[in-house]
Image (cartoon, rainbow, N blue to C red; front, side):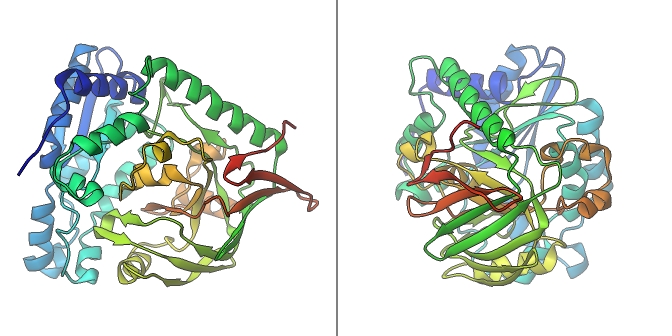
Length: 413
């Protein structure tokens, strides 16, 4: 098997971007890196860079997909998805210690769960662990980011070859590492996302509508919604980028005010079910997904809906235009961190409290009552394309174009 890692200076540049810009590691801070064993080379490079900028302690939390498969195949029913006390204590400590959290994505074993019982696979999801860490992340109590880690298995799924060279080339473009000054390029891109965020907030739209082949979806925005995009600031005033790369501006829908039909325009990987989903079609009424069909992965989608409460409601509406560097990279990554950034999208599951200022001081039930959905999942699905038009609708029904032909055309208010 032929495998190639990037040259040392390229991996070092990647780690510098993630550590210094992604989570913005502070002097004396503890850093946690979550990854699969196959992603160890990237994790180690990140750990080295974190220590280089002054981290006090770096730990790597490995999650083994082979172990999960063995559990689904052989473990007693009552053990599926059970989380041990020390694992929950470790997750709680992330918020208490204000760690910088880096999660690595890019599935190194895309087919490993094939042939398993979807119901047992769904029940193997560590719900209690997710319930513990989700509030810490979605309210930005800590600095956190999600970034990719190439591996032969992921490369083969994306490019047809286990040689990671082509995958790394795509990631370099998406991460703007192909630019003469990547840090400056990110500063300019971040400023553009902030400008679009501010333009949308100035408009104060009541609803967002997507219209195109197979899609006619209207999403009412949550009361007090504030659009976001690019960098955010955590509870300690540290600026960070939750996703690297990122091309979106996004808002929180009012989960009760979503109506219409959805046709996905890109395949996506349903992480909790380790399943690729293609050609998904959804029907939504009174804020609830009432029907789901797909050319591939339909049973996995339905299993997640059945397993996770409130996963049939929406938590995000996002706009991405054709200038996306991820799209420019020319690859379909079969990983939502990247593939959500090739086009405009929506997400079922949890909404982000920072999209509704003040909701971070509320409990989950209170947020739900206000219209901000809360769930132990967040799944982005791309529904944008050059044929899909996005409009903003005022409370009085006035319609303003936001995108046409996948170009951001919203005029200044």
